[in-house]
Length: 244
Length: 56
Image 1 (cartoon, rainbow over the protein chains, first blue to last red):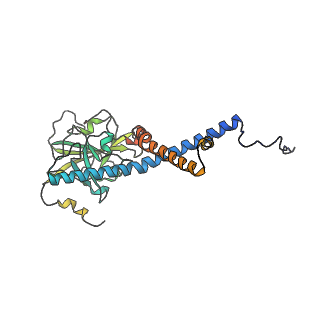
Image 2 (cartoon, rainbow over the protein chains, first blue to last red):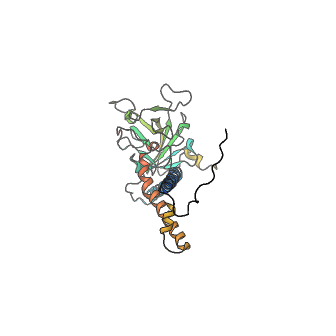
C-alpha cells in the first residue's frame, strides 16, 4: 500500500504572523542554544580564563615578595615564601600564601594556618589546586620519593625531600589517597594525634581525581637541609639556571 | 526571541548591529565577572582543602 504525498493545503504561512505554537518552539530552541553557548563559555572560563587570572595574581605575589625581600618593607596579606619543585617543571616556582580558602589558593600554594612554618619542628602542610586557577599541583601525581621541594623564605632556603609512603603502592610510592575528611594528614606528626613532633615534616595536599574531589592526594616529606640568606644559592636550585 | 529583540532595536541596521555587539559584550562581561565566579566555588574540582577544617 502506498501513501501519496498530500498536496500542500491552504496558503503558505505569511511571514511575521507565526502561530503561538511556532513562536513557543522557536523561542525554546533559541533558549537552549543560548544555554549551550553559556555552558561552552563556562568551560572556556574554567580551563583558560581562571589560569590566566591566577597566573597574573601569582606573578604579582612573587614580584611583591621579592621586592619586599630587597627593600625590607613587609607586605600585608601577601606571599611569605616561594616553593620550587623540579619534578613539576624547571620553571615551576609558586608563591606560598597563608590560608587555604579559594581566594588564597587562587594566588598560589596555600599554607594550612595552624601547621608549622617552613623549617619549624612539626608539619609544614600546604594545599594547591589540581585543576583550574593556575593548577600548581596539576601533576603532583608524578612526584617520586627523593624528589626535592625547596622553600625560599626571607631568611632561608629549606630543602625538603619527598618520602615513600608506608606500605607504598608500586605504581605511586610517593603518594596515597585519603578521604577528604581525614584531617589527620596535616597534624604535627601526620596521622598520629596527640604525638609531640620532633621532626621537621612536610605535607602536600591536592584533590583527586584531577577533575573531581572525591579523595585527596597526600605526599609526605621531611627537611634535610637549610641554607641561610643572604648566601650562595643552594646547589639544589641549579637546575633553574640550566636551559630547558 | 532574537528576532523580537532585533525588531525592537531602534535605528538603521548599522546602529542595530552596534547595539547588538554592545549588548553581547555586556552579557559576556556579566558572565565572566559575576556569574562564573559565583558558580566556580560550587564546582567539585576546586576542593583541595580537608573538610573538617583541619590545620586551619
